[in-house]
Image (tube, rainbow, N blue to C red; front, top):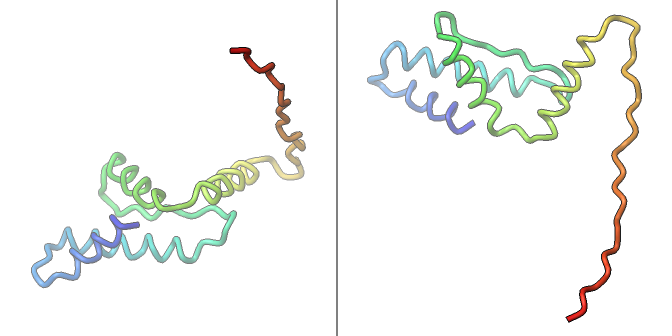
Length: 108
């Protein structure tokens, strides 16, 4: 998130180049998309035209850096469920259970 805000700060400078202004506009759109997203739903990625795939991935990762892990997991789960064919339900998975084993105390 901080990277996006820095892009916007640079873009509103009076001497900002066209490329810097375009990066700032893209940062604004990315923040707007994140604010409009509902928890658990897929968030579309807005990549500016003409950027290399590496730059697009770096921008996406920069955007996701501030997102809580729980929200990322919810996003991944919703995307996977959406990829299932119509009428197919994912099987229920039993939670992981750990058994606690008491170790004998070591005599000194």
